[in-house]
Length: 266
Image: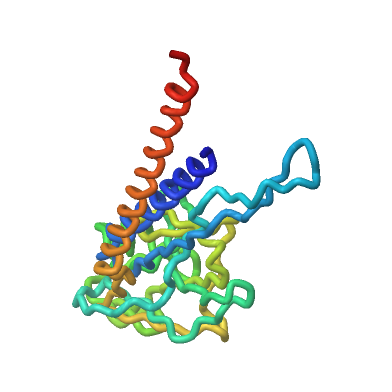
């Protein structure tokens, strides 16, 4: 009976975490450059139970249900949307190599610096200029290839496909694009920002012969979240959670009856 309790509880936990992931995807459906997460649900390894008083008598196989093994981002290119805003920049992947171990494509990211002076990475190219002319992304400063924040002291500026910024015809800086060859080293911090799990700085994609990309001003990359599909998956997760909950309640009632009614002296 306890086996059933473990199985139902494991199913509820897995579906709860899956629902949290799907809710986060839905919340970022309109976040430029956001890469939707997808979950891998796996069964716990099957175990063979033996009697404690002998090594030769097998009780049978046993496993405790399912679990949410990992979350993976869908690092495919999102559709481009024209905005007409000069500070909006879409990052377009043209050639990104596949990691030999994970068999998954790497990812290109803008490099930014947060208020604590730490590097973070994002695909969100919805940049803005503050009152000092600093190019930013949600309060973080966009970094140039020299590792410094980008300052544009003009309202008349252009951004080339290579990321070069020209203001009034004069070169200002080049937007830095970093390359993560192994997506396992990226930790999601929310709001479309990432850091490296080992706290190392991602290498620049500039000059990397295996990587080709371009930037497009006045455009944004849409989120890769499929709203309709995500909604259906959320409803499926809710129903699965409720089903496991009912199983758990049924086991609880059975145990209550076994403890309080069976074998009662009258």
